Length: 66
Image (cartoon, rainbow, N blue to C red):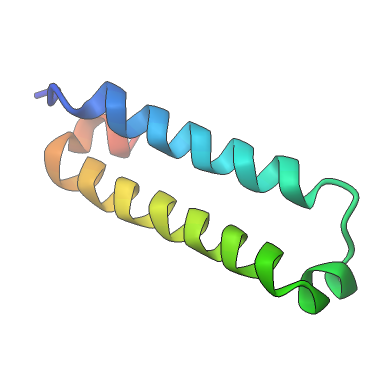
């Protein structure tokens, strides 16, 4: 059964992944390692993705597993 929160959850995942891709474009591992602000921003957005995926698995497993 699809949860009413599914569209919002999927949008959060999309937004966070898009952010990570944008801020890391053209960056090297050395850039990432040497920039605390970049690391923390990326790590926080990956946490958001993980939390959203967990919520999606609980609220709408049919969507989560397709």
